[in-house]
Image 1 (cartoon, rainbow, N blue to C red):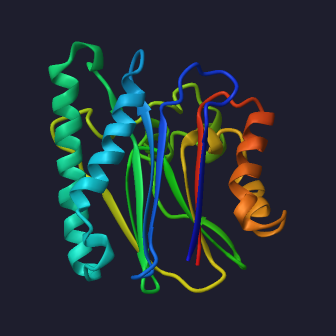
Image 2: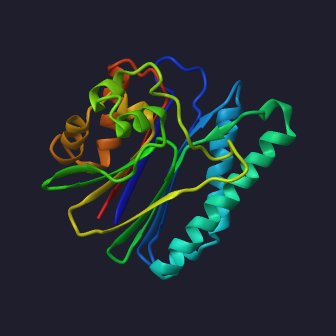
Length: 243
């Protein structure tokens, strides 16, 4: 397993409110990866994403290195709840952080498996020689409108409310994460990203940059550069895991 990560402030924003973590244990061959995209005024979004990332690593307490898949699923749900409670409490006890929250998408990988969880609209994609598919489902207003038949996916990608998310870490006292399990084999990739990438770079372009444009260890940089070239209207974060 190999993994790379990169975050960039983009071309418009004054603060980078994205956070990522790449943790790999060579002895066990297991990895923990995450992307958070913060929201809130002033520096609150930056605080929320950084706090959530640190709390996630701390509360997982190394069990990702040794736990069985069924144990990790239960622990993931508990940890998402713990992280949410602590971010929610921090937002409620500090006036400067009022209303802050963050998306979070995580992946625990090893032993030929990947366990993905998410809250919000930061995404996970699975890529292999046959193509690319989105694993997570955005918790967003436009996704709900598409599911109801009120918008097409094309309309949703250009809708004025496409930034409105319906679920976030720290926004409410409780939160529910979605869980996904998949088998992994050599030659496949898992990509985690914030919406700053998706808004500027299409899925076929992402697939091309990972599989065909050059070495995978430079794919994160190529994707960030492409998003910035397209306008970079938001912070951009990419984590790529190669199996």
